[in-house]
Image (cartoon, rainbow, N blue to C red):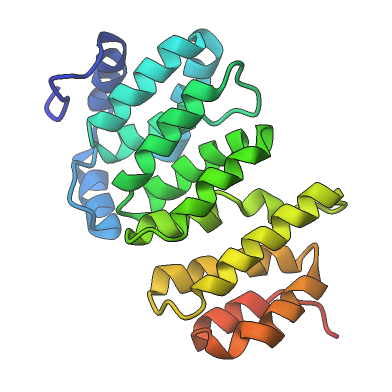
Length: 236
């Protein structure tokens, strides 16, 4: 199949061949225009990728899944990279050190939001399993790579969604809010959007912290980001 890299494992090649058989040139053209990142697009819709990922998670052992995910990612095909992330998006993976290491290795490759967000969804499961990994994520906040900095907020979104957080979870929430505060002077649209996304999601569960953040830092945020961050805040 065109686009398969020479180093791809046999297991991954089988899955890439299946993806290639589903190529839709019209959808692929639209997807390329929408996502803009310079790579091959197949036009395979998300529901199909979801079915394939579910099959992989239920039929392959973890070592084979890691080999498949690695090969899919290395192909640099849009849908293959998304499938790679979906194959590793699972709450329970035992052991999961290999999955976390692989997901973490993908972060410097991020160059567009869709692939990055799917990989961060997979990574978030591994962070929830072992929150000590937040120490590694914190280092991303100082990266020169825009998408790595953004990933530090996207991968920690689960900490915005806890209705009754335990003390350790509140500490993690405050820790990430500290990272977000360090981002408010970054004028890049994607960084501002990520800060707003984190705050908006948090406002549904912890509006007091969001109001406090906006009181302290909102005047330095881009107007669109401040508006988005406050959009779901209940009336005071």
